[in-house]
Length: 72
Length: 353
Image (cartoon, rainbow over all chains, first blue to last red):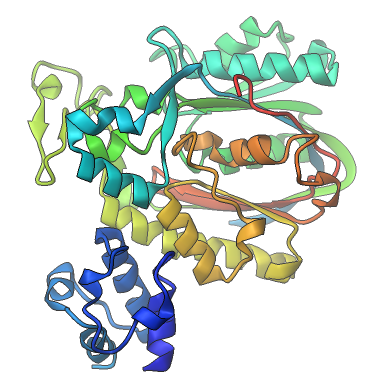
């Protein structure tokens, strides 16, 4: 999980890594935008070999959700 | 394709931005303050320069070329090649490069090419110029890359209007014993419609139908004669192909990413560039974002980042630029990377800045 959070953190510019916990609702982060969703999908594909669709991405709420799909 | 071209170097770079400026904040009423703020945050664009109604890409490049001639003290008759890279040509025919050859007072022995590329165009242009020189065909090639992308964008299309700006550039590429330029050039015609102006050519000629405005699912208004791109696909394309091309070049040159002195990278949006940098783990100070005052200026983002930040007298000491990576990606789809030495290149500050 620690490594996953580090990779997810790279998607952001102004968010502190302390704000990123497994239970964090990432959509509520101030910096979050549709571009961050794209970058997150790209990151998961590149590092975890999982291609997720935009529809699947829309159902993701917490960092744990993202971690789970990346490792599914 | 990847190769190294011998005995060639970039001698000088100049750029020109039009005087007209569009402040993104002035669009608050049209697009809504919240939307404008959100887009500005992602793109990093506060303002762009906009060409006047009667000002074309060739006019912008002409001004940049005139500055090069004046500053470099070049004898115009020694120019034997001219490449014009753009998506916004003066006429359907003849080639704009030939019009520029005449306007600039160059010899009739000048070989002229128009090259139809957008954001990746500078990379393709440097490659073409270098092949002309390395092959022995030419000694002094003028590469003129410029666009007036704002004229292809619908005024009520916020995603495009808030990103693209206009600019022209002039680069002198000359024979130089012992110096090299390496190029990695790629294209993907399977995805040609990812970034496209569908109508106005011969596949879909201009008609009443193609001039009709419509609203897309995101609420942007445009016609079939306006520029359109699939933003999600473009983001993935840049992150994937941009990374791959830069890594391919670093491997080919056997350069460590940290020994590169400067990365002049295409300025698509602040978000995209910053994410690409992080993926490549390159020092942000060596690969600056330079989009706030100009937007995405198509084929000139690479020379503009050099001209705007690294001109003679700036805080960058370009005499240390022995290992420089330039990389750009765009309409085509097409993309590529150049590795070269800019330590002896004369870089001039943009005109109108």
